[in-house]
Image (cartoon, rainbow, N blue to C red; front, top):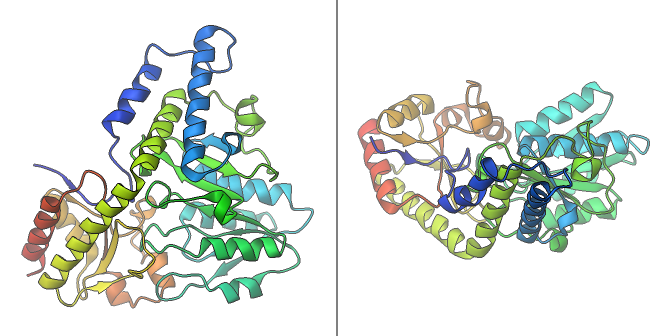
Length: 375
């Protein structure tokens, strides 16, 4: 059975060009990047070329990019690294209620260590209120962390305005851009972002590689002890093949950004039009104005999303009820709860996220199968 994949916010299929570029570093190019001999130096050069490519995608300096194992590690490093490095200045952190579990659980961990966290409410579309943010700032606030775009409902937050508020008050600003990076343009200099997390497997690179951007003047505690790798901030022999893959994926994303955005937006809009015709009573969760181009989150009132997803799976269709990192949890999505969605709509919510391998034929098949299930 052919698989029709509509869960690109959970992970993406690796692109052939990315596989081709990384493959030599899984076999013949096996040198340790810390070694002085030629094959080690070659691996080191490959890492630094990848670092330049990642930096170029978000418009920062290569030396401001630190490679990690995933977006969650980047988030953990940012929050805990800043918290521990600045605890002599204060122990208060601000974030939102709709963050990824990597942020929320890091905050809970820090609360157990004596830090205080303010979790901002969001409106019905998932936006942070800027006035509420300003009023939440205290003299001991050391960090604000608000995601660039939400993984469930696709809402793109007012990042530039949040950064201005943070800096006006002398506070460091971090954003989890795992869902946004590679999907929409990001310029960390223009937006004045201090720290940013990204992940490879959301942009057609393998699982197991991520990166953290840290503005040059920002000091943070190292996350892992050991060797001197990643400017003495992230120990452990580098995963050269996957770093190379991430660099290639970022290069492709930067080159094709406008074309890719248009493709996703067209597929999304085509899907929505067909859905509305077939199911007039669907409820779209989140805004359509400031939203990731490939994201739809729809509630089928009176339906159970889990049952629909199982039936779709039997028909070769992959979709999600929310964050893939918590899909084994039967409780209502914390994001849909935070935007005030009634339980009867929340339990019928399904996320469809489009990617480079999707076609209109996939959408036609999806809607046809949903008609079979629901009608």
